[in-house]
Image 1 (tube, rainbow, N blue to C red):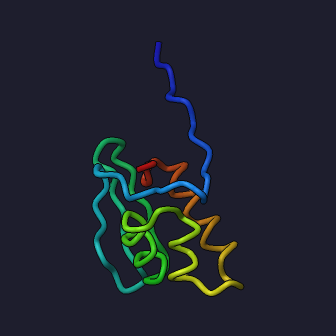
Image 2: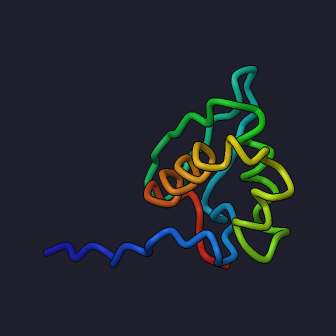
Image 3: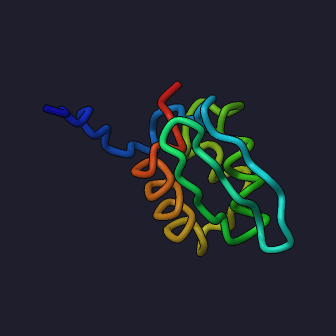
Length: 94
């Protein structure tokens, strides 16, 4: 029997970072993210999102990273993208 790990809710007030099991390969559209543990391939569809994801580990919270990298009108879109990346196990809590 396989027991799934409990899901961690995405909380933008916490510090998150790209998982150490994930490699990013830059592409013209953004990047390909490959999770070596799950073998899952995810497309990051904008260079700005790639920059944000790479920078997450240097901020005390996702909110701080969003403040530094994303204009206010775009925040909800980037928050949703980061939450989806977390659900795909590409991001981890620091």
